[in-house]
Length: 212
Ligand code: BEZ
Image 1 (tube, rainbow, N blue to C red):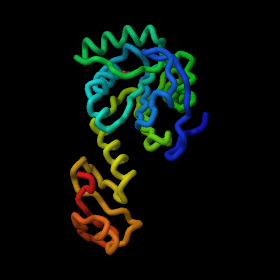
Image 2 (tube, protein in one colour):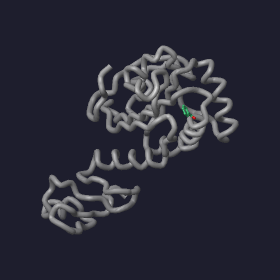
Image 3 (cartoon, rainbow, N blue to C red):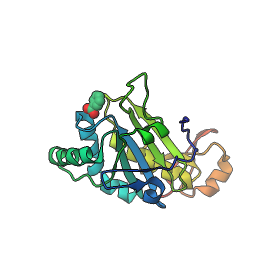
């Protein structure tokens, strides 16, 4: 197990899941991916998170992102838990949950932080680009449920900045102004961004989001 850093290739794996054996790279194909871990089945915060994720499936689909969750319990346990999630969160879990009983995948992805808990995974998130490089990692403690609006916002930023020479400022949301990449001088930026470039400081230039 090595630390997985931004820009690294996401380690591939084949594992059992709520939908049978699954290979990460085959499952993702040419899509973006989001892999997120849960401490254990039949736990309250995880139940709400998986419900939130399932309810956002359309939004992830629109962005060409496939979801895959992980919990260190068996596929049979996942199947029972999914019934509870569907019932209590008014949803249908519509993506695989890896059954990582032997902790193979959670070890590969460094999802167990022994000084927090030696058995359960923390709440890790990996966003994986179509070329299988890791674009974002995020680690929350077991006691804090993740914000799925934020995960979609980050995906919007990652997909925008992948294809345009811009970056997104604090609290940016899809459709708002973005900053011009510091690598581009203002003269070139004005040619590159026909919607206009507002120079607040030579290093702080705003432009309307180029792809809306
Ligand atoms: C939960 O998902 O609710 C949870 C799991 C482990 C520790 C604390 C909360």
